[in-house]
Image (cartoon, rainbow, N blue to C red; front, side):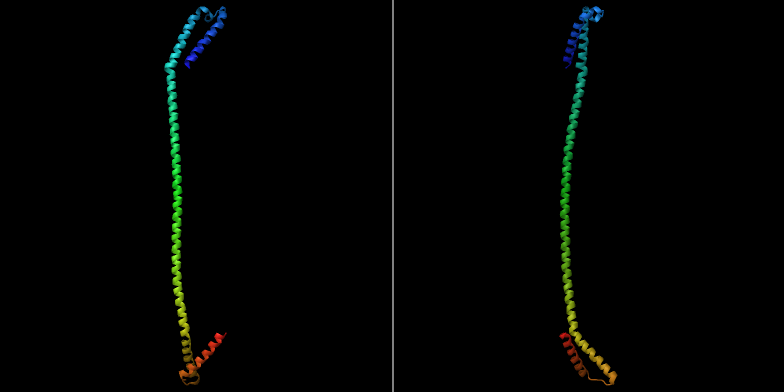
Length: 196
């Protein structure tokens, strides 16, 4: 690239000198053909020296800096790509852990729910059994009370009637005759009660 620039300047210089050859009569020494060889000589030396300085000192440093920057940029791009891949992997891993945790929580919830329902059903069955036992006991007690109540009522009625008759008449009546009267009345009451 520097060679092209160098030759481009030299060719322009020659064109400039060719066009200005006619202007030598104006008195400018750089336009006088006598000085052209020395001017070309110094032009070649100046541009040659400039070319050597640029080609050997400045441009290698610039190209080295450009290469360093290019390699740093490539390293940064690779590092960013690597970090992007790592972050995507970590996001995927996080999503997987989150999904697994949701599944585990759902399974745990279902297990606990089933266990609670099972415990509730067991307690309900136990309560039903206890209630059935209590109901049976109560029914048997009621039956016993019903069967014994008529005897007790009869006994109470006999004793009360005996006491009333004793207080009214002043005479003690035989319990067997009073019990016969009370039983006869209770049979009549039972028939009327069951008939209704």
